[in-house]
Image (cartoon, rainbow, N blue to C red; front, side):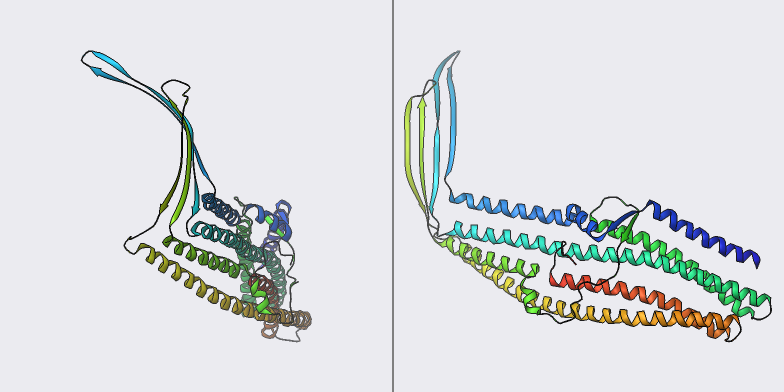
Length: 427
């Protein structure tokens, strides 16, 4: 019995020492530090930025067809003919010059393609915003999870102290003949459960660290410590105008830009039925010696008109119409989903905020009841069965209050995500 007592005391100090040494080597990160690092290093944000660059380059490529196309050429050639054992020179030829062409008319097909490309750029910019919204939510969730894991480790260590004290008290009463063996075994089991909770909390802490490191875009694991609290700053107790909020959501704006791009693409497809008129011009120097002195020049117009291609252009129009109709319905569906998400996120935020207050009162009540019961049990005023129920309620209340705080903070993060706020959002 004495051996067990000192074993549990030693185990407690080992856990306490572990907490001190771990804290000394941890890198402390607050929420703003995590935001700055994620904005710089997160691969999804970097990929979204590169997508913007691709769409901008695609727009420039499409727009280049509206400008003159100029080429330079330089040629030098020599030749010989062979007859029997003799060979004769055919002659040398040199020429250089410039040639160019300019699109004059193509049924405004290229102009519509450029406008469609501009909308594609806007869509990729909204995609970056949407990616930033998602990254923020994941990062905030990971930050809250690490805060919770840190606090849970502290709570489990506090519970271990409570269970250890209870075990020592019951052990003394058992040795004095004032308590039965079942009570002692229950106290031992509770203490063993407290040890398990500490080990589990330590594992959860490691997993939460990995999640936050991934959310920041770091490549390697590190011992980090989240500095912050569970305070909800974006409470929004009064129900806001969801319709107005949805209008600025990047996922909806992205679809609207894609729809506008599809409108211009459809117009461009109709342009395939129009003739294409192109002007050309060129100037060359040509001669048998370098540098050639013979002048050559040309001017011309080229007109092309599709006559029959097996229904190709009609099929292209049909495809473009279907794509536009699909995007219209996607926009309507996304709008409806966003409105529901806002309603649900706001309601969940209100529920969790109210639940925190309930759990806070429960914790205060159980702490007070535990203090009273501890004194009552020590003088034999209440039975072990009644006392252990009160102690179990205290343990549960501590964990429930922490979980309620974390749930409220996560509900706030989900509300901010539903509004479409980006990584740099102040709250």
